Length: 320
Image (tube, rainbow, N blue to C red):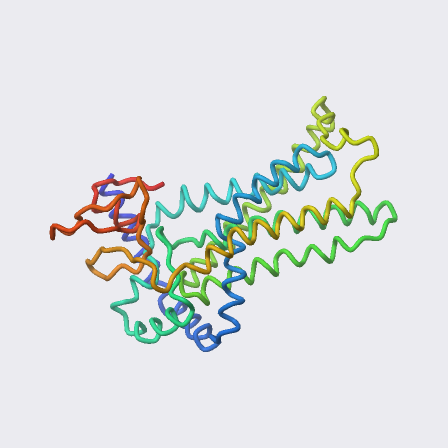
């Protein structure tokens, strides 16, 4: 197991070296863009890829599966998120073990520039590995799935001679995903190559979610499962505009659940006590029964560590 971990860590380091020039070139572009307004905008978009937003959206997608009219969207969301999460968090991140840029760049020539950009953006931090970007994966898996669903429905309505704006509205989703992707670089918590990988994984997951949704909807139509429709509890059915308004309000609520806590992240947050080949800027796990404080450096004091170093120093060799 340890030999596999060392090999994976070497893979993360190899990616750092192979794409160093490209990553630093992109960082300088984003660093030159920084200002107070764009920093706030970046925080808004980055919240749309956070698990505090994505998990509730997945639950909403599950609910939509029980309504015949929205079943296609529900299945697409649920399966896209499931596939993207498995690929990114279960398979690739533990396989690559790429350390966050605010840690690995400390011994590089760009560190003095990068540190200024990182602190100007709010000094956000995470507690897991960097490659690929989970926020970007989440943004694109949802965006691509909804883009394909909206475009598909627009074509169906057009074939029936009905006019709809769904085809144009569909493009809003990938634009939001691109902004979320850019926010992760702007906030300096991911390498540009991390977010590009997240884009690829998220796009793949979104396409898979859409195709699985089409398959399942056809299966439902040919079986008794097609009778599953919560909307039947209302004799008159649900008003389309009211349903759309309700879903929008729910999504705004989910966004607030993600964005408001994010306002307190970074800055003076307690950082990991690990000091080895670098000073770890990952946020420490505090008041967490699973990641309790312990004396990891042997100085007699109890310290808090990020998830990564807690496991390394505590002798655990597995990832969540």
